[in-house]
Image (cartoon, rainbow, N blue to C red):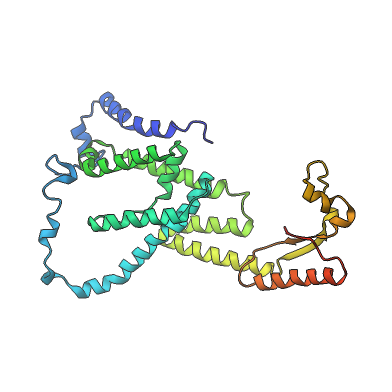
Length: 319
């Protein structure tokens, strides 16, 4: 865990030289390997990458008279669903990535950054963009952090976007395969193996349901299975603990902190009588809109009982 952070970058950087060395040992020319499908197909860009003269030709071909607006109307539901799907990436991927990297994100800054990037991309007739969880995990585990490294990655991405069609012709296809295989193993380990002790049986069963559905039926089925598993788990856990207040006790049952308490705490905790004026309520399950009112009513009822008995608590602790 974090011992050899540069192992993955070195591995991927060495894959291409090793591949060319293997071709040299076997006496296979790059032209022959390309014909056999070991390289990505080359794109004719005139040596100028994406900045060729043909880049903006698409806007000269558009003729509104030839557009079938009936087909556009039929495609609107799909376009709306894609837009909604892209919108949920930020509130889902950012917290998940924060948990993986043990950091506290600022969702306001994240939403503002995504808004600016997508707005500028749209004005430039570009593609929508959002944080990709899998690539970000690989970046973070390779000690990627800080503004300098992030700006360097962004600049390199721009260069690859421009000159990528030329570079891709010299990159072996196995690079994509090794990257996907590594991400698959790493994410499976994180989501299924490492999470075994973090969830109860019902929640862990939901993880397996999502995994099996996504592998067997595809990503759409996995998303549906995840939504069903989340709702079912939430409903089951809420039904089991309809009354979150498990019990209450006085502070006299707790371990003493006589050696490290402050002067203010001394007045309350120094004697048995003071500790009895602290009420502790133990909670269990989940507190949500369905039981929050009953939880508050239960706590107020316990406080009223203590007050009527002449033992009104000075401090209320929710555990």
